[in-house]
Length: 574
Image (cartoon, rainbow, N blue to C red; front, side):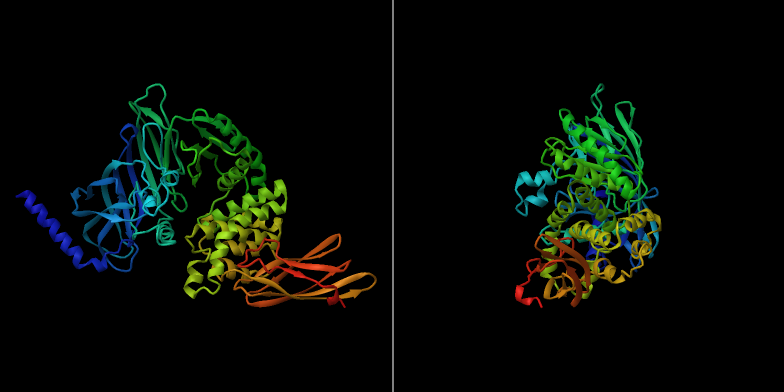
Protein backbone atom coordinates (compact mmCIF):
# COMPACT_ATOMS: atom_id res chain seq x y z
CA UNK A 1 0.00 0.00 0.00
CA UNK A 2 2.83 2.39 0.85
CA UNK A 3 4.47 1.77 -2.54
CA UNK A 4 1.15 2.28 -4.34
CA UNK A 5 0.59 5.52 -2.41
CA UNK A 6 4.07 6.80 -3.25
CA UNK A 7 3.50 6.09 -6.93
CA UNK A 8 0.23 7.99 -6.75
CA UNK A 9 2.00 11.00 -5.24
CA UNK A 10 4.60 10.96 -8.00
CA UNK A 11 1.81 10.71 -10.59
CA UNK A 12 0.17 13.80 -9.10
CA UNK A 13 3.48 15.69 -9.23
CA UNK A 14 4.12 14.65 -12.83
CA UNK A 15 0.64 15.74 -13.85
CA UNK A 16 1.13 19.07 -12.09
CA UNK A 17 4.42 19.58 -13.89
CA UNK A 18 2.89 18.65 -17.23
CA UNK A 19 0.04 21.10 -16.65
CA UNK A 20 2.46 23.82 -15.65
CA UNK A 21 5.41 22.96 -17.89
CA UNK A 22 5.11 26.32 -19.58
CA UNK A 23 5.75 27.96 -16.18
CA UNK A 24 8.72 25.80 -15.10
CA UNK A 25 11.52 28.35 -15.07
CA UNK A 26 14.82 26.49 -14.66
CA UNK A 27 16.75 29.71 -14.17
CA UNK A 28 14.32 31.36 -11.74
CA UNK A 29 16.41 30.60 -8.66
CA UNK A 30 19.93 31.76 -7.88
CA UNK A 31 21.99 29.58 -5.55
CA UNK A 32 23.26 32.25 -3.17
CA UNK A 33 24.96 30.06 -0.58
CA UNK A 34 26.39 26.55 -0.43
CA UNK A 35 27.38 24.81 2.82
CA UNK A 36 28.43 21.29 1.84
CA UNK A 37 30.19 18.27 3.32
CA UNK A 38 32.11 16.53 0.52
CA UNK A 39 33.27 12.93 0.92
CA UNK A 40 35.68 11.60 -1.73
CA UNK A 41 36.80 7.97 -2.05
CA UNK A 42 39.41 7.88 -4.87
CA UNK A 43 39.73 4.08 -4.83
CA UNK A 44 35.99 3.80 -5.60
CA UNK A 45 35.86 6.91 -7.82
CA UNK A 46 33.00 8.06 -5.61
CA UNK A 47 31.75 11.44 -4.47
CA UNK A 48 29.18 11.91 -1.70
CA UNK A 49 27.65 15.24 -0.74
CA UNK A 50 25.49 16.30 2.18
CA UNK A 51 24.65 19.83 3.21
CA UNK A 52 22.51 22.92 2.81
CA UNK A 53 21.95 25.38 -0.02
CA UNK A 54 20.10 28.71 -0.04
CA UNK A 55 18.16 29.64 -3.16
CA UNK A 56 16.69 33.04 -4.06
CA UNK A 57 13.85 33.64 -6.47
CA UNK A 58 15.23 36.15 -8.99
CA UNK A 59 12.27 35.86 -11.35
CA UNK A 60 9.34 38.27 -11.40
CA UNK A 61 6.80 35.60 -10.38
CA UNK A 62 6.28 33.44 -7.27
CA UNK A 63 7.84 30.00 -7.77
CA UNK A 64 6.33 26.76 -6.44
CA UNK A 65 8.89 24.47 -8.10
CA UNK A 66 12.69 24.58 -7.78
CA UNK A 67 15.04 22.84 -10.19
CA UNK A 68 18.29 21.31 -8.89
CA UNK A 69 20.77 19.75 -11.31
CA UNK A 70 23.88 17.63 -10.83
CA UNK A 71 25.94 15.45 -13.17
CA UNK A 72 24.08 12.48 -14.63
CA UNK A 73 26.70 10.20 -13.01
CA UNK A 74 25.40 11.32 -9.60
CA UNK A 75 22.03 10.50 -8.05
CA UNK A 76 19.78 12.40 -5.68
CA UNK A 77 19.22 10.73 -2.29
CA UNK A 78 17.15 13.27 -0.39
CA UNK A 79 15.92 16.87 -0.49
CA UNK A 80 14.47 18.33 2.69
CA UNK A 81 13.26 21.60 4.15
CA UNK A 82 14.01 21.65 7.87
CA UNK A 83 13.11 18.20 9.16
CA UNK A 84 10.55 17.51 6.46
CA UNK A 85 11.33 15.60 3.27
CA UNK A 86 10.15 17.28 0.08
CA UNK A 87 8.62 15.54 -2.87
CA UNK A 88 10.72 15.70 -6.02
CA UNK A 89 10.82 14.11 -9.44
CA UNK A 90 14.26 13.04 -10.64
CA UNK A 91 14.84 12.87 -14.38
CA UNK A 92 17.63 12.96 -16.93
CA UNK A 93 18.02 16.32 -18.64
CA UNK A 94 20.20 16.59 -21.74
CA UNK A 95 22.78 19.35 -21.42
CA UNK A 96 26.42 19.75 -22.40
CA UNK A 97 27.11 21.87 -19.35
CA UNK A 98 28.30 18.55 -17.86
CA UNK A 99 30.96 16.30 -19.40
CA UNK A 100 28.53 13.37 -19.57
CA UNK A 101 26.23 15.38 -21.81
CA UNK A 102 23.36 15.11 -19.32
CA UNK A 103 22.24 16.17 -15.86
CA UNK A 104 20.40 14.41 -13.07
CA UNK A 105 17.62 16.93 -12.54
CA UNK A 106 15.39 17.10 -9.48
CA UNK A 107 12.18 19.13 -9.81
CA UNK A 108 11.26 19.91 -6.23
CA UNK A 109 7.80 20.85 -5.00
CA UNK A 110 8.28 23.55 -2.38
CA UNK A 111 5.98 23.78 0.68
CA UNK A 112 4.77 27.15 -0.55
CA UNK A 113 5.49 29.46 -3.45
CA UNK A 114 8.62 31.56 -2.93
CA UNK A 115 7.92 35.23 -3.78
CA UNK A 116 10.25 37.31 -5.98
CA UNK A 117 13.53 38.01 -4.11
CA UNK A 118 12.47 35.51 -1.46
CA UNK A 119 14.98 32.99 -0.05
CA UNK A 120 14.54 29.33 0.79
CA UNK A 121 16.87 26.80 2.46
CA UNK A 122 17.15 23.22 1.25
CA UNK A 123 18.99 20.29 2.83
CA UNK A 124 20.31 17.99 0.15
CA UNK A 125 22.10 14.67 -0.28
CA UNK A 126 23.44 13.01 -3.41
CA UNK A 127 26.25 10.65 -4.41
CA UNK A 128 27.74 8.72 -7.28
CA UNK A 129 30.91 8.36 -9.33
CA UNK A 130 32.93 10.77 -11.45
CA UNK A 131 34.80 8.84 -14.12
CA UNK A 132 36.56 9.89 -17.30
CA UNK A 133 33.70 10.71 -19.67
CA UNK A 134 33.75 12.74 -22.89
CA UNK A 135 30.41 11.77 -24.38
CA UNK A 136 29.36 15.36 -25.01
CA UNK A 137 32.38 15.72 -27.32
CA UNK A 138 32.45 12.30 -28.97
CA UNK A 139 28.79 12.56 -29.97
CA UNK A 140 29.67 15.61 -32.07
CA UNK A 141 32.43 13.56 -33.74
CA UNK A 142 35.41 14.81 -31.74
CA UNK A 143 38.17 12.15 -31.93
CA UNK A 144 38.21 10.17 -28.69
CA UNK A 145 41.83 10.99 -27.80
CA UNK A 146 41.25 14.72 -28.27
CA UNK A 147 37.94 14.51 -26.40
CA UNK A 148 39.55 12.91 -23.35
CA UNK A 149 42.38 15.45 -23.38
CA UNK A 150 39.73 18.19 -23.21
CA UNK A 151 37.30 16.56 -20.76
CA UNK A 152 39.91 15.02 -18.43
CA UNK A 153 37.89 15.35 -15.23
CA UNK A 154 37.77 12.22 -13.07
CA UNK A 155 38.11 10.77 -9.60
CA UNK A 156 40.52 7.84 -9.55
CA UNK A 157 42.94 6.18 -7.18
CA UNK A 158 46.05 7.40 -9.02
CA UNK A 159 44.94 10.92 -9.98
CA UNK A 160 41.89 13.07 -9.32
CA UNK A 161 41.07 16.40 -10.95
CA UNK A 162 37.52 17.78 -11.14
CA UNK A 163 36.47 21.18 -12.49
CA UNK A 164 33.12 22.84 -11.81
CA UNK A 165 30.06 23.90 -13.81
CA UNK A 166 30.78 23.82 -17.51
CA UNK A 167 32.75 20.60 -17.06
CA UNK A 168 31.30 18.64 -14.12
CA UNK A 169 28.20 19.63 -12.16
CA UNK A 170 29.45 18.16 -8.87
CA UNK A 171 27.61 20.87 -6.92
CA UNK A 172 23.97 21.79 -7.61
CA UNK A 173 23.20 24.21 -10.43
CA UNK A 174 20.09 25.15 -12.43
CA UNK A 175 20.23 26.14 -16.11
CA UNK A 176 18.36 25.64 -19.32
CA UNK A 177 19.79 22.97 -21.62
CA UNK A 178 23.03 23.77 -23.46
CA UNK A 179 24.41 22.16 -26.61
CA UNK A 180 27.91 22.21 -28.05
CA UNK A 181 26.43 21.61 -31.50
CA UNK A 182 24.53 24.92 -31.37
CA UNK A 183 27.33 27.43 -31.84
CA UNK A 184 27.87 29.55 -28.73
CA UNK A 185 24.84 28.09 -26.92
CA UNK A 186 26.88 26.46 -24.14
CA UNK A 187 28.88 29.63 -23.50
CA UNK A 188 25.71 31.72 -23.35
CA UNK A 189 24.00 29.39 -20.87
CA UNK A 190 27.14 29.14 -18.78
CA UNK A 191 27.58 32.91 -18.95
CA UNK A 192 24.07 33.48 -17.56
CA UNK A 193 24.79 31.01 -14.77
CA UNK A 194 28.04 32.74 -13.84
CA UNK A 195 26.35 36.14 -13.89
CA UNK A 196 23.62 34.95 -11.53
CA UNK A 197 26.07 33.28 -9.17
CA UNK A 198 28.68 36.07 -9.19
CA UNK A 199 27.93 37.13 -5.61
CA UNK A 200 27.31 33.61 -4.29
CA UNK A 201 29.49 32.01 -1.62
CA UNK A 202 30.46 28.41 -0.94
CA UNK A 203 31.75 26.65 2.18
CA UNK A 204 33.13 23.13 1.75
CA UNK A 205 34.28 20.60 4.31
CA UNK A 206 36.15 18.06 2.20
CA UNK A 207 37.22 14.65 3.47
CA UNK A 208 39.30 12.28 1.35
CA UNK A 209 39.78 8.62 2.18
CA UNK A 210 43.41 7.48 1.91
CA UNK A 211 44.57 3.86 2.03
CA UNK A 212 48.26 4.80 1.98
CA UNK A 213 49.41 5.47 5.53
CA UNK A 214 52.94 6.55 4.54
CA UNK A 215 52.40 8.56 1.34
CA UNK A 216 49.13 10.44 1.59
CA UNK A 217 48.18 12.44 -1.50
CA UNK A 218 47.83 16.21 -1.54
CA UNK A 219 44.49 17.98 -1.84
CA UNK A 220 44.40 21.30 -3.73
CA UNK A 221 41.27 23.45 -3.92
CA UNK A 222 40.96 26.76 -5.78
CA UNK A 223 39.09 28.43 -2.92
CA UNK A 224 39.61 31.90 -1.44
CA UNK A 225 40.82 30.26 1.75
CA UNK A 226 41.66 26.60 2.13
CA UNK A 227 44.26 25.71 4.77
CA UNK A 228 46.40 22.64 4.25
CA UNK A 229 44.42 19.45 4.82
CA UNK A 230 45.06 17.62 8.09
CA UNK A 231 44.79 13.97 8.98
CA UNK A 232 41.73 12.62 10.76
CA UNK A 233 42.04 8.87 11.14
CA UNK A 234 42.00 7.19 7.73
CA UNK A 235 41.04 10.48 6.08
CA UNK A 236 42.56 13.88 5.48
CA UNK A 237 40.21 16.84 5.62
CA UNK A 238 40.15 20.50 4.60
CA UNK A 239 37.84 23.41 5.33
CA UNK A 240 37.50 25.68 2.28
CA UNK A 241 35.63 28.92 1.59
CA UNK A 242 34.77 30.76 -1.63
CA UNK A 243 33.83 34.31 -0.68
CA UNK A 244 32.64 35.00 -4.22
CA UNK A 245 32.10 32.73 -7.21
CA UNK A 246 32.25 35.64 -9.67
CA UNK A 247 35.03 34.20 -11.82
CA UNK A 248 35.99 31.08 -9.87
CA UNK A 249 34.37 27.78 -10.74
CA UNK A 250 35.10 25.50 -7.73
CA UNK A 251 37.60 22.77 -8.58
CA UNK A 252 39.78 20.28 -6.70
CA UNK A 253 42.79 18.07 -7.39
CA UNK A 254 44.12 15.06 -5.43
CA UNK A 255 47.49 13.52 -6.31
CA UNK A 256 50.84 12.44 -4.91
CA UNK A 257 52.59 15.71 -5.60
CA UNK A 258 56.03 17.06 -4.92
CA UNK A 259 56.53 20.81 -4.83
CA UNK A 260 58.84 23.47 -6.26
CA UNK A 261 58.21 26.49 -4.06
CA UNK A 262 59.09 30.10 -4.87
CA UNK A 263 58.01 33.43 -3.43
CA UNK A 264 55.55 34.10 -6.24
CA UNK A 265 54.40 30.58 -7.15
CA UNK A 266 54.14 27.06 -5.79
CA UNK A 267 54.39 24.36 -8.47
CA UNK A 268 52.93 20.98 -7.50
CA UNK A 269 54.34 18.32 -9.82
CA UNK A 270 54.06 14.59 -10.36
CA UNK A 271 57.04 12.31 -9.89
CA UNK A 272 59.49 12.54 -12.79
CA UNK A 273 58.38 16.03 -13.85
CA UNK A 274 60.78 17.90 -11.58
CA UNK A 275 62.81 19.53 -14.38
CA UNK A 276 59.72 21.02 -16.04
CA UNK A 277 58.38 22.17 -12.67
CA UNK A 278 61.61 23.95 -11.73
CA UNK A 279 61.73 25.55 -15.17
CA UNK A 280 58.20 26.92 -14.72
CA UNK A 281 58.92 28.13 -11.19
CA UNK A 282 62.08 29.91 -12.36
CA UNK A 283 60.20 31.55 -15.26
CA UNK A 284 57.51 32.80 -12.88
CA UNK A 285 60.10 34.15 -10.49
CA UNK A 286 61.80 36.10 -13.29
CA UNK A 287 58.50 37.49 -14.60
CA UNK A 288 57.12 38.59 -11.23
CA UNK A 289 58.86 42.01 -11.08
CA UNK A 290 57.52 42.89 -14.54
CA UNK A 291 53.97 41.95 -13.50
CA UNK A 292 54.29 43.87 -10.23
CA UNK A 293 55.30 46.99 -12.18
CA UNK A 294 52.03 46.88 -14.12
CA UNK A 295 49.54 45.26 -11.74
CA UNK A 296 51.02 45.61 -8.26
CA UNK A 297 52.33 43.05 -5.82
CA UNK A 298 50.62 39.62 -5.81
CA UNK A 299 47.66 39.43 -3.43
CA UNK A 300 48.26 35.71 -3.01
CA UNK A 301 50.72 33.07 -4.10
CA UNK A 302 49.91 31.52 -7.48
CA UNK A 303 49.37 27.74 -7.37
CA UNK A 304 50.18 25.49 -10.33
CA UNK A 305 49.27 21.80 -10.36
CA UNK A 306 50.46 19.14 -12.79
CA UNK A 307 48.00 17.11 -14.88
CA UNK A 308 48.70 13.44 -15.52
CA UNK A 309 47.73 13.55 -19.22
CA UNK A 310 50.61 15.29 -21.08
CA UNK A 311 48.15 16.38 -23.78
CA UNK A 312 45.49 17.71 -21.40
CA UNK A 313 44.12 21.18 -22.08
CA UNK A 314 45.27 23.64 -19.36
CA UNK A 315 42.63 25.15 -17.08
CA UNK A 316 42.80 28.14 -14.78
CA UNK A 317 40.25 29.25 -12.20
CA UNK A 318 40.92 31.55 -9.30
CA UNK A 319 44.44 31.12 -7.92
CA UNK A 320 44.90 27.61 -9.36
CA UNK A 321 46.34 26.69 -12.77
CA UNK A 322 46.01 23.06 -13.85
CA UNK A 323 48.40 22.21 -16.68
CA UNK A 324 50.54 19.28 -17.80
CA UNK A 325 54.17 19.97 -16.92
CA UNK A 326 55.68 16.98 -18.72
CA UNK A 327 57.39 18.11 -21.90
CA UNK A 328 56.39 21.72 -21.32
CA UNK A 329 58.11 24.06 -23.80
CA UNK A 330 60.56 26.20 -21.77
CA UNK A 331 59.94 29.12 -24.14
CA UNK A 332 56.25 29.09 -23.27
CA UNK A 333 56.72 28.78 -19.51
CA UNK A 334 57.22 32.51 -19.01
CA UNK A 335 54.17 33.37 -21.11
CA UNK A 336 51.93 31.01 -19.13
CA UNK A 337 53.38 32.20 -15.83
CA UNK A 338 52.72 35.85 -16.73
CA UNK A 339 49.02 35.13 -17.25
CA UNK A 340 48.81 33.35 -13.90
CA UNK A 341 50.77 36.01 -12.02
CA UNK A 342 48.56 38.75 -13.48
CA UNK A 343 45.56 37.01 -11.94
CA UNK A 344 47.40 36.66 -8.62
CA UNK A 345 48.08 40.42 -8.58
CA UNK A 346 44.84 41.78 -10.02
CA UNK A 347 41.22 40.62 -10.07
CA UNK A 348 37.91 41.95 -11.30
CA UNK A 349 34.39 40.51 -11.32
CA UNK A 350 34.14 41.59 -14.98
CA UNK A 351 35.49 39.03 -17.43
CA UNK A 352 36.65 41.56 -20.03
CA UNK A 353 38.79 43.25 -17.38
CA UNK A 354 39.93 40.15 -15.50
CA UNK A 355 40.78 37.93 -18.47
CA UNK A 356 41.48 40.74 -20.92
CA UNK A 357 44.19 42.22 -18.71
CA UNK A 358 45.78 38.81 -18.08
CA UNK A 359 46.10 38.25 -21.83
CA UNK A 360 47.23 41.86 -22.28
CA UNK A 361 49.98 41.10 -19.74
CA UNK A 362 51.21 38.30 -22.01
CA UNK A 363 51.42 40.67 -24.99
CA UNK A 364 53.26 43.22 -22.84
CA UNK A 365 55.70 40.55 -21.69
CA UNK A 366 56.45 39.47 -25.26
CA UNK A 367 57.07 43.09 -26.21
CA UNK A 368 59.37 43.42 -23.19
CA UNK A 369 61.27 40.29 -24.21
CA UNK A 370 61.33 40.49 -28.01
CA UNK A 371 59.94 43.84 -29.16
CA UNK A 372 56.61 45.24 -30.37
CA UNK A 373 56.43 43.06 -33.47
CA UNK A 374 56.46 39.89 -31.35
CA UNK A 375 53.55 41.22 -29.29
CA UNK A 376 51.54 42.17 -32.38
CA UNK A 377 52.14 38.75 -33.93
CA UNK A 378 50.90 37.11 -30.72
CA UNK A 379 47.77 39.25 -30.71
CA UNK A 380 47.28 38.38 -34.36
CA UNK A 381 46.95 34.71 -33.43
CA UNK A 382 44.15 35.59 -31.02
CA UNK A 383 42.62 38.17 -33.32
CA UNK A 384 41.84 35.84 -36.22
CA UNK A 385 38.81 34.11 -34.64
CA UNK A 386 36.84 37.17 -33.61
CA UNK A 387 37.97 39.08 -36.72
CA UNK A 388 36.26 36.45 -38.89
CA UNK A 389 33.13 36.79 -36.78
CA UNK A 390 33.26 40.57 -37.14
CA UNK A 391 33.66 40.32 -40.91
CA UNK A 392 30.66 38.01 -41.14
CA UNK A 393 28.52 40.43 -39.15
CA UNK A 394 29.64 43.89 -40.20
CA UNK A 395 26.20 45.27 -39.37
CA UNK A 396 25.16 43.64 -36.05
CA UNK A 397 21.56 43.96 -34.93
CA UNK A 398 20.89 46.36 -32.05
CA UNK A 399 20.32 43.51 -29.57
CA UNK A 400 23.57 41.88 -30.71
CA UNK A 401 25.42 45.14 -30.08
CA UNK A 402 24.47 44.89 -26.41
CA UNK A 403 24.62 41.10 -25.92
CA UNK A 404 28.01 40.75 -27.62
CA UNK A 405 29.48 43.84 -25.96
CA UNK A 406 32.50 43.22 -23.77
CA UNK A 407 30.60 44.17 -20.62
CA UNK A 408 27.94 41.50 -21.31
CA UNK A 409 29.54 38.84 -23.49
CA UNK A 410 29.91 35.24 -22.32
CA UNK A 411 31.96 34.42 -25.43
CA UNK A 412 35.55 33.60 -24.43
CA UNK A 413 36.88 34.77 -27.81
CA UNK A 414 35.53 38.20 -26.98
CA UNK A 415 36.27 38.67 -23.28
CA UNK A 416 39.72 37.11 -23.61
CA UNK A 417 41.11 37.84 -27.07
CA UNK A 418 39.15 40.90 -28.17
CA UNK A 419 39.51 42.43 -24.71
CA UNK A 420 43.28 41.96 -24.91
CA UNK A 421 43.32 44.01 -28.11
CA UNK A 422 41.12 46.67 -26.51
CA UNK A 423 43.57 47.05 -23.63
CA UNK A 424 46.45 47.30 -26.09
CA UNK A 425 44.65 50.03 -28.05
CA UNK A 426 43.94 51.91 -24.82
CA UNK A 427 47.60 51.66 -23.87
CA UNK A 428 48.62 53.07 -27.28
CA UNK A 429 46.18 55.96 -26.83
CA UNK A 430 46.80 57.00 -23.21
CA UNK A 431 50.35 55.72 -22.62
CA UNK A 432 51.91 53.34 -20.13
CA UNK A 433 52.01 55.70 -17.16
CA UNK A 434 48.34 56.70 -17.37
CA UNK A 435 47.12 53.12 -17.83
CA UNK A 436 49.23 51.86 -14.91
CA UNK A 437 47.72 54.55 -12.67
CA UNK A 438 44.20 53.60 -13.74
CA UNK A 439 44.87 49.91 -13.01
CA UNK A 440 46.38 50.78 -9.62
CA UNK A 441 43.30 52.82 -8.68
CA UNK A 442 40.89 49.98 -9.49
CA UNK A 443 39.08 48.34 -6.55
CA UNK A 444 36.90 45.36 -7.50
CA UNK A 445 34.47 45.91 -4.63
CA UNK A 446 33.71 49.38 -6.03
CA UNK A 447 33.03 48.14 -9.56
CA UNK A 448 29.25 48.41 -9.46
CA UNK A 449 28.58 49.64 -12.99
CA UNK A 450 30.12 49.13 -16.46
CA UNK A 451 31.51 52.68 -16.62
CA UNK A 452 33.66 52.31 -13.49
CA UNK A 453 36.91 51.24 -15.19
CA UNK A 454 36.45 53.55 -18.21
CA UNK A 455 36.04 56.47 -15.78
CA UNK A 456 39.29 55.53 -14.04
CA UNK A 457 41.11 55.52 -17.39
CA UNK A 458 39.61 58.81 -18.53
CA UNK A 459 40.62 60.41 -15.23
CA UNK A 460 44.25 59.87 -16.23
CA UNK A 461 44.00 61.66 -19.59
CA UNK A 462 42.61 64.92 -20.94
CA UNK A 463 41.10 63.12 -23.92
CA UNK A 464 37.44 62.27 -24.41
CA UNK A 465 37.33 58.50 -24.97
CA UNK A 466 33.58 57.95 -24.66
CA UNK A 467 33.35 57.16 -28.38
CA UNK A 468 35.97 54.43 -27.99
CA UNK A 469 34.29 52.77 -25.01
CA UNK A 470 30.92 52.94 -26.74
CA UNK A 471 32.27 51.22 -29.88
CA UNK A 472 34.43 48.59 -28.15
CA UNK A 473 33.17 48.02 -24.59
CA UNK A 474 29.53 49.05 -24.06
CA UNK A 475 28.37 47.90 -27.50
CA UNK A 476 29.65 45.67 -30.27
CA UNK A 477 29.79 47.81 -33.40
CA UNK A 478 31.73 45.16 -35.28
CA UNK A 479 35.28 45.90 -36.40
CA UNK A 480 36.90 48.72 -38.38
CA UNK A 481 37.96 48.32 -42.00
CA UNK A 482 40.62 50.88 -42.90
CA UNK A 483 41.71 51.86 -46.37
CA UNK A 484 43.85 54.77 -47.62
CA UNK A 485 41.59 56.56 -50.08
CA UNK A 486 44.19 59.07 -51.27
CA UNK A 487 47.62 60.49 -50.51
CA UNK A 488 48.60 63.79 -52.16
CA UNK A 489 52.22 64.94 -51.93
CA UNK A 490 53.81 68.35 -52.39
CA UNK A 491 57.36 69.48 -51.82
CA UNK A 492 58.23 71.79 -48.94
CA UNK A 493 61.23 74.03 -48.42
CA UNK A 494 64.09 73.50 -48.10
CA UNK A 495 64.03 69.70 -48.74
CA UNK A 496 60.91 67.92 -47.59
CA UNK A 497 57.60 66.43 -48.65
CA UNK A 498 54.15 66.91 -47.12
CA UNK A 499 51.51 64.23 -47.57
CA UNK A 500 47.79 64.85 -47.13
CA UNK A 501 46.32 61.42 -46.49
CA UNK A 502 42.63 60.47 -46.38
CA UNK A 503 41.73 57.23 -44.60
CA UNK A 504 38.31 55.62 -44.93
CA UNK A 505 36.83 53.35 -42.26
CA UNK A 506 34.10 51.18 -43.80
CA UNK A 507 33.55 49.33 -40.52
CA UNK A 508 31.19 50.18 -37.68
CA UNK A 509 33.77 50.72 -34.91
CA UNK A 510 36.13 53.66 -34.73
CA UNK A 511 39.74 53.53 -33.57
CA UNK A 512 42.95 55.48 -33.30
CA UNK A 513 45.07 53.75 -35.91
CA UNK A 514 48.80 54.11 -36.67
CA UNK A 515 49.63 55.44 -40.13
CA UNK A 516 53.15 54.84 -41.50
CA UNK A 517 54.71 56.63 -44.46
CA UNK A 518 57.69 54.77 -45.90
CA UNK A 519 60.49 56.29 -47.97
CA UNK A 520 64.00 55.28 -49.03
CA UNK A 521 65.97 54.55 -45.89
CA UNK A 522 63.25 55.19 -43.31
CA UNK A 523 59.67 55.75 -42.25
CA UNK A 524 57.50 58.09 -40.17
CA UNK A 525 54.50 56.97 -38.10
CA UNK A 526 51.64 59.14 -36.83
CA UNK A 527 48.29 58.24 -35.27
CA UNK A 528 44.86 59.14 -36.60
CA UNK A 529 41.37 58.72 -35.14
CA UNK A 530 38.90 57.48 -37.75
CA UNK A 531 35.34 56.93 -36.51
CA UNK A 532 33.13 54.16 -37.88
CA UNK A 533 31.66 54.74 -41.36
CA UNK A 534 33.75 57.92 -41.68
CA UNK A 535 36.89 59.42 -43.18
CA UNK A 536 39.89 60.85 -41.37
CA UNK A 537 42.49 63.23 -42.79
CA UNK A 538 46.06 63.75 -41.60
CA UNK A 539 49.16 65.58 -42.87
CA UNK A 540 52.55 63.93 -42.45
CA UNK A 541 55.93 65.45 -43.39
CA UNK A 542 58.83 63.24 -44.53
CA UNK A 543 62.42 64.14 -45.62
CA UNK A 544 62.42 62.09 -48.85
CA UNK A 545 59.93 61.22 -51.59
CA UNK A 546 57.25 58.92 -50.06
CA UNK A 547 56.85 55.47 -51.57
CA UNK A 548 53.91 53.93 -49.73
CA UNK A 549 51.47 54.48 -46.89
CA UNK A 550 50.50 51.65 -44.50
CA UNK A 551 47.44 52.05 -42.29
CA UNK A 552 47.45 49.86 -39.16
CA UNK A 553 50.46 47.90 -37.94
CA UNK A 554 48.27 45.10 -36.58
CA UNK A 555 47.56 46.76 -33.23
CA UNK A 556 43.93 47.50 -34.17
CA UNK A 557 41.76 44.47 -35.04
CA UNK A 558 40.10 44.80 -38.45
CA UNK A 559 37.62 42.80 -40.49
CA UNK A 560 39.88 43.08 -43.57
CA UNK A 561 43.62 43.82 -43.53
CA UNK A 562 44.29 43.05 -47.19
CA UNK A 563 43.69 46.66 -48.27
CA UNK A 564 45.98 48.49 -45.84
CA UNK A 565 48.85 49.39 -48.18
CA UNK A 566 48.71 52.35 -50.56
CA UNK A 567 51.47 52.68 -53.16
CA UNK A 568 52.51 56.23 -54.11
CA UNK A 569 53.43 56.72 -57.70
CA UNK A 570 56.04 59.36 -58.55
CA UNK A 571 53.49 61.17 -60.74
CA UNK A 572 51.27 61.76 -57.72
CA UNK A 573 53.83 64.11 -56.17
CA UNK A 574 53.28 67.78 -56.90
